[in-house]
Amino acid sequence: MAAGVNADAGSVRNALRWGLLLAATVTVGFRLPRLAHYFQSWREALRLGDSSAAEGWRTFLFVEAISLLIVTAISLAVFFVLGKRGKSRP
Image 1: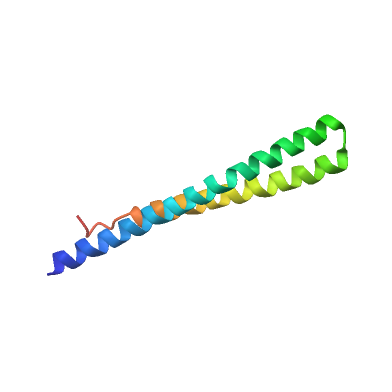
Image 2 (image 1 turned 90 degrees about the vertical axis):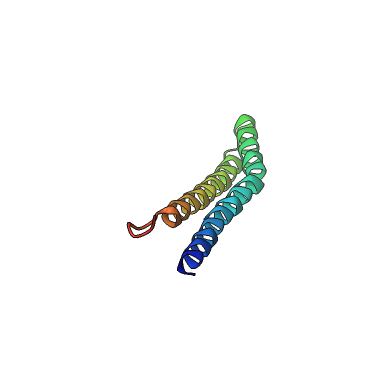
């Protein structure tokens, strides 16, 4: 019975870590078009010579890129932390 409990706990843990990684991947994938739009808008403002608009678009681009990197970093950290097994487990 104890082996069944350990197998279930490992299975739940594995499902949780893969589910969180999938959720983070979907979040990043959903926000990538917005990031691309900000990049295009920033480049267009630079091309037109509108420094005020370019600064605003650069800020949006910077914040969006940093937020996506944070989501990715946290999800990868949780993925690897949940994947580690102690020495007592096989």
